[in-house]
Image 1 (cartoon, rainbow, N blue to C red):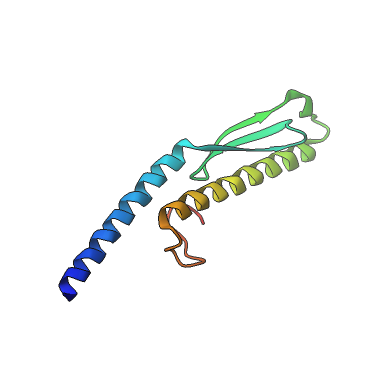
Image 2 (image 1 turned 120 degrees about the vertical axis):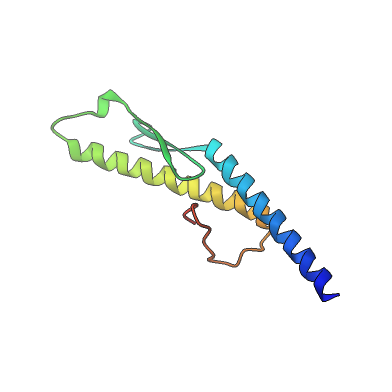
Length: 111
């Protein structure tokens, strides 16, 4: 009886691992966007928290105020990565069904 239960547990763990791997692959294809300055600076990131694109409206490029542009880029990147983390956490939550303990981090996902 114990052996059968262990086999079942191992089978469930393998299925869970396969689901996690599938979600990780899907996250690479899902994108989120962060913006700053009313959309003058936009950053696109994927669900794996990789920055894919940075768009800067030429109107905000002022050689006399580089600091403002740097602040907008930082804000847009931070917002995009925060959204990517939320997306990844949501997708992983769907797979785990609450099985992961609170605060547990998954390698390669940053959350």
